[in-house]
Image (cartoon, rainbow, N blue to C red; front, side, top):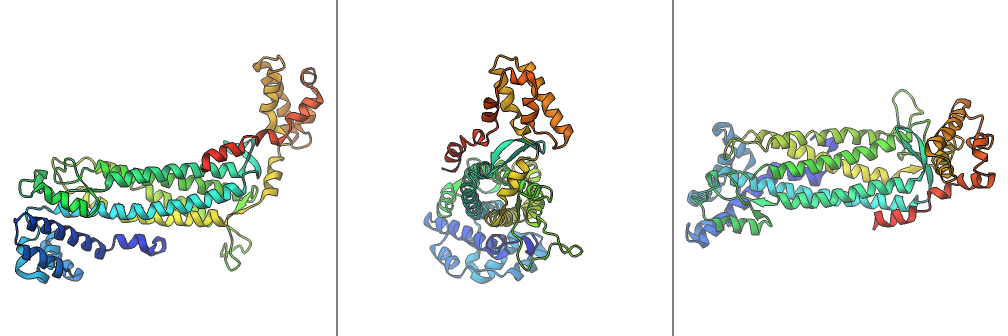
Length: 432
Protein backbone atom coordinates (compact mmCIF):
# COMPACT_ATOMS: atom_id res chain seq x y z
CA UNK A 1 0.00 0.00 0.00
CA UNK A 2 1.25 3.49 -0.84
CA UNK A 3 2.54 5.61 2.08
CA UNK A 4 -0.37 8.08 1.71
CA UNK A 5 -2.76 5.47 3.12
CA UNK A 6 -0.38 3.67 5.47
CA UNK A 7 -0.04 4.03 9.20
CA UNK A 8 3.34 3.10 10.64
CA UNK A 9 2.31 0.51 13.23
CA UNK A 10 0.30 -1.57 10.77
CA UNK A 11 2.68 -1.14 7.83
CA UNK A 12 5.64 -2.32 9.90
CA UNK A 13 4.00 -5.74 10.33
CA UNK A 14 4.55 -6.40 6.63
CA UNK A 15 8.09 -5.08 6.40
CA UNK A 16 10.77 -7.71 5.61
CA UNK A 17 12.43 -7.01 8.96
CA UNK A 18 9.36 -8.13 10.92
CA UNK A 19 8.74 -11.15 8.69
CA UNK A 20 12.28 -12.45 8.95
CA UNK A 21 12.34 -11.87 12.72
CA UNK A 22 9.28 -14.08 13.00
CA UNK A 23 10.88 -16.69 10.72
CA UNK A 24 14.01 -16.69 12.87
CA UNK A 25 11.99 -17.07 16.06
CA UNK A 26 10.05 -20.01 14.60
CA UNK A 27 13.28 -21.75 13.57
CA UNK A 28 14.89 -21.03 16.94
CA UNK A 29 11.96 -22.31 18.98
CA UNK A 30 11.78 -25.45 16.84
CA UNK A 31 15.51 -26.10 17.26
CA UNK A 32 15.34 -25.54 21.02
CA UNK A 33 12.63 -28.17 21.34
CA UNK A 34 14.58 -30.57 19.15
CA UNK A 35 17.56 -30.07 21.46
CA UNK A 36 15.38 -30.92 24.46
CA UNK A 37 14.41 -34.12 22.66
CA UNK A 38 18.13 -34.88 21.96
CA UNK A 39 17.49 -34.77 18.24
CA UNK A 40 20.12 -32.07 17.77
CA UNK A 41 22.99 -30.91 20.03
CA UNK A 42 22.11 -28.44 22.80
CA UNK A 43 24.93 -26.25 21.55
CA UNK A 44 23.23 -25.83 18.19
CA UNK A 45 20.12 -24.40 19.81
CA UNK A 46 22.23 -22.09 21.99
CA UNK A 47 24.20 -20.88 18.98
CA UNK A 48 21.05 -20.06 17.02
CA UNK A 49 19.50 -18.24 19.99
CA UNK A 50 22.66 -16.23 20.70
CA UNK A 51 24.03 -15.63 17.22
CA UNK A 52 21.05 -16.09 14.95
CA UNK A 53 20.69 -13.15 12.58
CA UNK A 54 20.02 -12.29 8.95
CA UNK A 55 20.83 -9.64 6.40
CA UNK A 56 17.96 -8.53 4.18
CA UNK A 57 20.16 -7.36 1.33
CA UNK A 58 22.02 -10.66 1.44
CA UNK A 59 18.72 -12.60 1.42
CA UNK A 60 17.62 -10.70 -1.67
CA UNK A 61 20.95 -11.36 -3.33
CA UNK A 62 20.76 -15.10 -2.64
CA UNK A 63 17.11 -15.34 -3.64
CA UNK A 64 17.93 -13.76 -7.01
CA UNK A 65 20.09 -16.84 -7.66
CA UNK A 66 18.23 -19.70 -5.95
CA UNK A 67 14.68 -18.40 -6.62
CA UNK A 68 13.52 -19.54 -3.15
CA UNK A 69 12.96 -17.10 -0.32
CA UNK A 70 13.14 -19.56 2.60
CA UNK A 71 16.37 -21.11 1.32
CA UNK A 72 17.81 -17.63 0.84
CA UNK A 73 16.86 -16.77 4.42
CA UNK A 74 18.37 -19.99 5.81
CA UNK A 75 21.57 -19.36 3.88
CA UNK A 76 21.85 -15.87 5.35
CA UNK A 77 21.29 -17.24 8.86
CA UNK A 78 23.92 -19.92 8.23
CA UNK A 79 26.45 -17.22 7.39
CA UNK A 80 25.92 -15.83 10.89
CA UNK A 81 26.02 -19.04 12.95
CA UNK A 82 28.46 -21.26 11.05
CA UNK A 83 28.57 -25.09 11.23
CA UNK A 84 25.57 -25.46 13.55
CA UNK A 85 23.41 -24.21 10.69
CA UNK A 86 23.15 -27.81 9.45
CA UNK A 87 20.71 -28.50 12.29
CA UNK A 88 18.45 -25.55 11.53
CA UNK A 89 15.15 -26.38 9.73
CA UNK A 90 15.60 -30.11 10.53
CA UNK A 91 12.60 -32.05 9.25
CA UNK A 92 10.71 -28.86 8.45
CA UNK A 93 9.29 -27.57 5.22
CA UNK A 94 9.02 -24.00 3.98
CA UNK A 95 5.31 -23.82 4.70
CA UNK A 96 5.96 -24.59 8.37
CA UNK A 97 7.80 -21.28 8.59
CA UNK A 98 5.84 -19.22 6.10
CA UNK A 99 2.35 -20.25 7.22
CA UNK A 100 3.08 -19.94 10.91
CA UNK A 101 4.55 -16.51 10.27
CA UNK A 102 1.46 -15.57 8.24
CA UNK A 103 -0.66 -16.46 11.28
CA UNK A 104 1.47 -14.30 13.55
CA UNK A 105 1.22 -11.35 11.16
CA UNK A 106 -2.56 -11.71 10.86
CA UNK A 107 -2.83 -11.87 14.64
CA UNK A 108 -0.66 -8.75 15.00
CA UNK A 109 -2.82 -6.96 12.44
CA UNK A 110 -6.04 -8.10 14.12
CA UNK A 111 -4.85 -6.68 17.43
CA UNK A 112 -4.39 -3.28 15.81
CA UNK A 113 -7.72 -3.44 13.98
CA UNK A 114 -9.55 -4.29 17.20
CA UNK A 115 -8.08 -1.16 18.78
CA UNK A 116 -9.14 0.77 15.68
CA UNK A 117 -12.69 -0.54 16.01
CA UNK A 118 -12.71 0.60 19.62
CA UNK A 119 -11.89 4.13 18.43
CA UNK A 120 -14.81 4.05 16.00
CA UNK A 121 -17.13 2.65 18.67
CA UNK A 122 -16.12 5.30 21.19
CA UNK A 123 -16.71 8.09 18.67
CA UNK A 124 -20.09 6.70 17.59
CA UNK A 125 -21.25 6.16 21.17
CA UNK A 126 -20.29 9.70 22.17
CA UNK A 127 -22.11 11.30 19.23
CA UNK A 128 -25.14 8.98 19.53
CA UNK A 129 -25.56 10.01 23.16
CA UNK A 130 -25.09 13.65 22.22
CA UNK A 131 -27.81 13.51 19.55
CA UNK A 132 -30.16 10.91 21.00
CA UNK A 133 -33.04 13.45 20.86
CA UNK A 134 -31.93 15.44 17.80
CA UNK A 135 -34.92 15.07 15.48
CA UNK A 136 -34.35 14.37 11.81
CA UNK A 137 -36.15 12.66 8.96
CA UNK A 138 -35.69 8.99 8.28
CA UNK A 139 -35.52 8.16 4.59
CA UNK A 140 -36.28 5.08 2.54
CA UNK A 141 -35.33 4.99 -1.13
CA UNK A 142 -33.85 8.45 -0.47
CA UNK A 143 -37.38 9.81 0.09
CA UNK A 144 -38.72 11.17 3.37
CA UNK A 145 -40.20 8.40 5.48
CA UNK A 146 -40.91 9.13 9.14
CA UNK A 147 -39.17 11.10 11.91
CA UNK A 148 -36.27 9.57 13.80
CA UNK A 149 -33.31 11.01 15.67
CA UNK A 150 -29.74 11.45 14.56
CA UNK A 151 -28.63 9.64 17.69
CA UNK A 152 -30.65 6.59 16.66
CA UNK A 153 -29.04 6.67 13.22
CA UNK A 154 -25.59 6.62 14.82
CA UNK A 155 -26.63 3.96 17.32
CA UNK A 156 -27.45 1.65 14.42
CA UNK A 157 -23.95 2.06 13.07
CA UNK A 158 -22.53 1.57 16.56
CA UNK A 159 -24.36 -1.76 16.82
CA UNK A 160 -22.93 -2.86 13.47
CA UNK A 161 -19.35 -2.04 14.45
CA UNK A 162 -19.84 -3.75 17.79
CA UNK A 163 -20.80 -6.90 15.89
CA UNK A 164 -17.73 -6.45 13.70
CA UNK A 165 -15.50 -6.31 16.75
CA UNK A 166 -16.94 -9.60 17.98
CA UNK A 167 -16.48 -11.13 14.53
CA UNK A 168 -12.88 -9.98 14.31
CA UNK A 169 -12.08 -11.42 17.74
CA UNK A 170 -13.43 -14.77 16.51
CA UNK A 171 -11.54 -14.46 13.21
CA UNK A 172 -8.32 -13.71 15.11
CA UNK A 173 -8.83 -16.85 17.16
CA UNK A 174 -9.45 -18.94 14.04
CA UNK A 175 -6.28 -17.73 12.34
CA UNK A 176 -4.02 -18.02 15.40
CA UNK A 177 -2.69 -21.32 14.09
CA UNK A 178 0.74 -22.96 13.92
CA UNK A 179 1.92 -25.76 11.66
CA UNK A 180 5.27 -27.51 12.07
CA UNK A 181 4.32 -30.84 10.53
CA UNK A 182 6.86 -31.35 7.71
CA UNK A 183 6.32 -32.36 4.12
CA UNK A 184 2.65 -33.11 3.30
CA UNK A 185 1.81 -32.72 6.98
CA UNK A 186 2.57 -36.23 8.28
CA UNK A 187 5.18 -35.39 10.98
CA UNK A 188 7.30 -38.16 9.42
CA UNK A 189 10.45 -36.07 9.84
CA UNK A 190 9.59 -33.98 12.90
CA UNK A 191 8.14 -34.74 16.31
CA UNK A 192 4.65 -33.23 16.89
CA UNK A 193 5.89 -31.93 20.24
CA UNK A 194 8.07 -29.47 18.31
CA UNK A 195 4.93 -27.96 16.79
CA UNK A 196 3.24 -27.87 20.20
CA UNK A 197 6.24 -26.06 21.69
CA UNK A 198 6.38 -23.44 18.92
CA UNK A 199 2.61 -22.93 19.10
CA UNK A 200 2.63 -22.40 22.86
CA UNK A 201 5.58 -20.01 22.75
CA UNK A 202 3.96 -17.93 20.01
CA UNK A 203 0.49 -18.07 21.55
CA UNK A 204 -0.93 -20.08 18.69
CA UNK A 205 -2.70 -23.42 18.40
CA UNK A 206 -1.49 -26.43 16.36
CA UNK A 207 -3.40 -27.00 13.14
CA UNK A 208 -5.72 -30.03 13.34
CA UNK A 209 -4.67 -31.38 9.93
CA UNK A 210 -2.15 -29.22 8.12
CA UNK A 211 -1.66 -31.05 4.79
CA UNK A 212 1.69 -29.16 4.69
CA UNK A 213 -0.13 -25.82 4.65
CA UNK A 214 -2.68 -24.32 7.01
CA UNK A 215 -6.06 -24.78 5.28
CA UNK A 216 -7.04 -21.54 3.59
CA UNK A 217 -10.63 -21.56 4.78
CA UNK A 218 -9.22 -19.99 7.94
CA UNK A 219 -7.68 -17.13 6.00
CA UNK A 220 -10.80 -16.75 3.87
CA UNK A 221 -12.88 -16.31 7.01
CA UNK A 222 -10.50 -13.63 8.22
CA UNK A 223 -10.59 -11.64 4.97
CA UNK A 224 -14.36 -12.01 4.65
CA UNK A 225 -14.63 -10.48 8.11
CA UNK A 226 -12.42 -7.57 7.04
CA UNK A 227 -14.55 -7.21 3.91
CA UNK A 228 -17.77 -7.00 5.90
CA UNK A 229 -16.19 -4.34 8.13
CA UNK A 230 -15.27 -2.41 4.98
CA UNK A 231 -18.89 -2.51 3.81
CA UNK A 232 -20.03 -0.95 7.08
CA UNK A 233 -17.34 1.70 6.76
CA UNK A 234 -18.76 2.54 3.34
CA UNK A 235 -22.33 2.40 4.64
CA UNK A 236 -21.60 5.11 7.21
CA UNK A 237 -19.46 7.09 4.77
CA UNK A 238 -22.29 7.16 2.22
CA UNK A 239 -24.74 8.32 4.89
CA UNK A 240 -22.46 11.26 5.66
CA UNK A 241 -21.98 12.04 1.97
CA UNK A 242 -25.74 12.11 1.36
CA UNK A 243 -26.43 14.22 4.43
CA UNK A 244 -23.72 16.71 3.42
CA UNK A 245 -25.19 17.40 -0.02
CA UNK A 246 -25.93 21.13 -0.38
CA UNK A 247 -29.68 20.65 -0.68
CA UNK A 248 -29.69 18.48 2.47
CA UNK A 249 -26.77 19.76 4.62
CA UNK A 250 -27.80 18.10 7.86
CA UNK A 251 -24.22 17.18 8.69
CA UNK A 252 -20.81 18.16 7.36
CA UNK A 253 -17.28 16.90 7.69
CA UNK A 254 -15.11 19.23 9.73
CA UNK A 255 -13.45 21.79 7.47
CA UNK A 256 -10.18 23.24 8.80
CA UNK A 257 -9.60 26.98 8.60
CA UNK A 258 -6.64 26.50 6.25
CA UNK A 259 -8.27 23.73 4.20
CA UNK A 260 -9.19 24.22 0.54
CA UNK A 261 -12.02 22.32 -1.11
CA UNK A 262 -11.44 22.93 -4.82
CA UNK A 263 -8.68 24.23 -7.03
CA UNK A 264 -11.30 25.98 -9.20
CA UNK A 265 -14.20 26.86 -6.87
CA UNK A 266 -13.15 28.57 -3.63
CA UNK A 267 -16.56 28.09 -2.01
CA UNK A 268 -16.41 24.28 -1.98
CA UNK A 269 -16.46 22.21 1.24
CA UNK A 270 -16.47 18.63 0.01
CA UNK A 271 -16.93 15.35 1.97
CA UNK A 272 -13.50 14.15 0.86
CA UNK A 273 -12.91 11.98 3.91
CA UNK A 274 -16.09 9.98 3.41
CA UNK A 275 -15.46 9.71 -0.33
CA UNK A 276 -11.98 8.41 0.45
CA UNK A 277 -13.49 5.79 2.76
CA UNK A 278 -15.82 4.63 -0.01
CA UNK A 279 -12.73 4.07 -2.15
CA UNK A 280 -10.82 2.36 0.66
CA UNK A 281 -13.73 -0.03 1.15
CA UNK A 282 -13.40 -1.13 -2.48
CA UNK A 283 -9.72 -1.91 -1.99
CA UNK A 284 -10.40 -3.90 1.18
CA UNK A 285 -13.27 -5.90 -0.29
CA UNK A 286 -11.17 -6.68 -3.35
CA UNK A 287 -9.24 -9.10 -1.12
CA UNK A 288 -12.28 -11.21 -0.33
CA UNK A 289 -12.76 -13.12 -3.59
CA UNK A 290 -9.03 -13.99 -3.97
CA UNK A 291 -9.00 -15.20 -0.35
CA UNK A 292 -12.00 -17.43 -1.04
CA UNK A 293 -10.41 -18.75 -4.21
CA UNK A 294 -7.22 -19.59 -2.27
CA UNK A 295 -9.11 -22.29 -0.38
CA UNK A 296 -8.95 -24.63 -3.38
CA UNK A 297 -5.35 -25.86 -3.57
CA UNK A 298 -3.96 -28.92 -5.36
CA UNK A 299 -3.72 -31.97 -3.13
CA UNK A 300 -1.59 -31.34 -0.01
CA UNK A 301 -0.34 -27.99 -1.29
CA UNK A 302 0.58 -25.75 -4.17
CA UNK A 303 1.65 -22.11 -4.21
CA UNK A 304 -1.16 -20.58 -6.22
CA UNK A 305 -2.22 -18.84 -3.01
CA UNK A 306 1.22 -17.41 -2.27
CA UNK A 307 1.39 -14.54 -4.75
CA UNK A 308 -2.19 -13.59 -3.87
CA UNK A 309 -1.44 -13.40 -0.15
CA UNK A 310 1.72 -11.36 -0.66
CA UNK A 311 -0.55 -8.70 -2.17
CA UNK A 312 -3.81 -8.86 -0.22
CA UNK A 313 -2.18 -9.32 3.19
CA UNK A 314 -0.59 -5.86 3.40
CA UNK A 315 -2.95 -3.96 1.11
CA UNK A 316 -6.26 -4.99 2.72
CA UNK A 317 -5.07 -4.70 6.30
CA UNK A 318 -3.16 -1.44 5.91
CA UNK A 319 -6.22 0.02 4.14
CA UNK A 320 -8.54 -1.24 6.88
CA UNK A 321 -6.34 0.29 9.57
CA UNK A 322 -6.22 3.61 7.74
CA UNK A 323 -9.95 3.62 7.02
CA UNK A 324 -11.05 2.85 10.57
CA UNK A 325 -8.83 5.57 11.99
CA UNK A 326 -10.03 8.10 9.44
CA UNK A 327 -13.65 7.16 10.11
CA UNK A 328 -13.19 7.60 13.87
CA UNK A 329 -11.79 11.09 13.23
CA UNK A 330 -14.64 12.05 10.90
CA UNK A 331 -17.30 10.97 13.39
CA UNK A 332 -15.54 12.66 16.30
CA UNK A 333 -15.40 16.05 14.53
CA UNK A 334 -18.60 15.74 12.47
CA UNK A 335 -20.54 19.01 12.28
CA UNK A 336 -24.23 18.42 12.97
CA UNK A 337 -26.94 20.95 12.08
CA UNK A 338 -30.13 20.25 14.11
CA UNK A 339 -31.97 23.34 12.79
CA UNK A 340 -31.49 22.16 9.21
CA UNK A 341 -32.70 18.72 10.22
CA UNK A 342 -35.94 20.27 11.46
CA UNK A 343 -36.28 22.36 8.28
CA UNK A 344 -35.89 19.24 6.15
CA UNK A 345 -38.22 17.28 8.39
CA UNK A 346 -40.97 19.84 7.77
CA UNK A 347 -40.43 20.27 4.03
CA UNK A 348 -43.19 17.81 3.20
CA UNK A 349 -45.80 19.78 5.17
CA UNK A 350 -46.74 16.93 7.46
CA UNK A 351 -46.73 14.01 5.02
CA UNK A 352 -44.40 12.16 7.38
CA UNK A 353 -47.46 11.52 9.60
CA UNK A 354 -49.31 9.55 6.90
CA UNK A 355 -48.89 6.15 8.54
CA UNK A 356 -50.12 7.47 11.88
CA UNK A 357 -53.25 8.80 10.17
CA UNK A 358 -53.73 5.50 8.35
CA UNK A 359 -53.55 3.55 11.61
CA UNK A 360 -55.95 5.95 13.34
CA UNK A 361 -58.53 5.50 10.57
CA UNK A 362 -58.27 1.70 10.73
CA UNK A 363 -58.85 1.92 14.49
CA UNK A 364 -61.92 4.05 13.76
CA UNK A 365 -63.66 1.18 11.92
CA UNK A 366 -62.46 1.86 8.38
CA UNK A 367 -60.92 -1.02 6.41
CA UNK A 368 -57.20 -0.76 5.80
CA UNK A 369 -57.76 -0.63 2.04
CA UNK A 370 -60.23 2.25 2.27
CA UNK A 371 -58.14 4.07 4.87
CA UNK A 372 -55.10 3.78 2.63
CA UNK A 373 -56.96 5.31 -0.31
CA UNK A 374 -58.24 8.19 1.83
CA UNK A 375 -54.80 9.00 3.21
CA UNK A 376 -53.06 8.59 -0.13
CA UNK A 377 -55.40 10.86 -2.07
CA UNK A 378 -54.86 13.63 0.48
CA UNK A 379 -51.14 13.04 0.47
CA UNK A 380 -51.05 13.32 -3.32
CA UNK A 381 -52.73 16.71 -3.11
CA UNK A 382 -49.92 17.92 -0.88
CA UNK A 383 -47.31 16.54 -3.29
CA UNK A 384 -48.97 18.23 -6.26
CA UNK A 385 -49.53 21.56 -4.49
CA UNK A 386 -45.77 21.72 -3.84
CA UNK A 387 -45.93 23.17 -0.37
CA UNK A 388 -49.05 25.35 -0.73
CA UNK A 389 -51.18 23.01 1.38
CA UNK A 390 -50.37 21.17 4.59
CA UNK A 391 -51.28 17.52 5.03
CA UNK A 392 -53.24 18.32 8.17
CA UNK A 393 -55.33 20.94 6.35
CA UNK A 394 -56.01 18.53 3.51
CA UNK A 395 -57.26 15.92 5.99
CA UNK A 396 -59.43 18.45 7.85
CA UNK A 397 -61.14 19.33 4.56
CA UNK A 398 -61.95 15.67 3.81
CA UNK A 399 -65.29 14.57 5.26
CA UNK A 400 -64.26 10.90 5.11
CA UNK A 401 -61.58 11.77 7.62
CA UNK A 402 -63.44 14.21 9.85
CA UNK A 403 -66.36 11.82 10.23
CA UNK A 404 -64.01 9.47 12.05
CA UNK A 405 -61.30 11.74 13.49
CA UNK A 406 -61.99 15.08 15.13
CA UNK A 407 -59.55 17.99 15.10
CA UNK A 408 -58.21 17.13 18.55
CA UNK A 409 -57.42 13.58 17.48
CA UNK A 410 -55.64 14.82 14.36
CA UNK A 411 -53.64 17.32 16.41
CA UNK A 412 -52.46 14.50 18.69
CA UNK A 413 -51.33 12.49 15.66
CA UNK A 414 -49.19 15.36 14.32
CA UNK A 415 -46.74 15.20 17.24
CA UNK A 416 -43.05 14.34 16.85
CA UNK A 417 -42.94 12.97 20.39
CA UNK A 418 -44.88 9.94 19.16
CA UNK A 419 -41.76 8.94 17.24
CA UNK A 420 -39.23 9.44 20.00
CA UNK A 421 -40.96 7.71 22.93
CA UNK A 422 -38.82 4.56 22.61
CA UNK A 423 -35.50 6.17 21.62
CA UNK A 424 -34.01 5.94 25.10
CA UNK A 425 -34.77 2.24 25.46
CA UNK A 426 -33.34 1.49 21.99
CA UNK A 427 -30.14 3.38 22.76
CA UNK A 428 -29.91 1.69 26.14
CA UNK A 429 -30.05 -1.65 24.35
CA UNK A 430 -27.61 -0.64 21.61
CA UNK A 431 -24.95 1.26 23.52
CA UNK A 432 -24.57 -0.96 26.60
